Length: 365
Image (cartoon, helix red, strand yellow):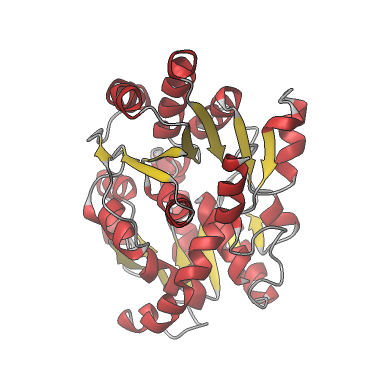
């Protein structure tokens, strides 16, 4: 069996790493395509090293651009690779532009070469059509021959959308496979010490959603809330490139002296910091899952989440919407007072480190 795995952006790497190794251990041919939607060392190269991902077989050099530009470039450059490799399966993770582009190419080539499409993280829904990721999720699921779900709540979403049940397979959360595999290294790293932070006595924040950073008013609100948190507990903010650009454009840098600002961090360093945090504040989907697996309280700065199971079963909570600095601070205080849970004690079914094996078995079957 030949399986082509497509990775484009930082959240994809944690999902494809365990599947790539499981495929090769099982004796299958794995072809790794990196679209390079995220392409610099901090957003891509460091993650490949930290997650033990081998060199890609194909790099597309797509780079940054609008949603339309990225999607079109991936489609244009991915199509001849599928035609030449003739895979049995194309496996796409997540909800980024690279995922949708590869899905469209595969679906259109299916009648010609017989390749089939499998979608990791199928069925997740925020029900917010303002999010580009929601469009990517829904359209990719419509194209997919095999829909691999990370949690049982995704099945109800797919059923309501008319997806036949025989195309849907529950596999669990691949991000937890990577987390459990690299957690010993993360704990040995003790990244908090490099920032003069004491484990259990600091917060970590990430911010990158266009709705939070591209609008100056929203960005100022988020930064005011994080600043209020930092007055009560040291707060570390690794700055995503798009966020850094918007902070500079808004002239906010001089107002953020109370925050520990760093460039983007590699996977092991970031996992080490999250594992040691008292609270995580984020608009990232992946961190909602990782904090639930680790038992770390999380505050999500979004109106909805496509991962509601992290709220109903896990350690996640949504800050009051619309966001205010006072609301962010109040949510932080509530999360901190709740405290940490034992790792794994609030993890949903299938968040057990064995999802990659279930993915490969589903492809084989």
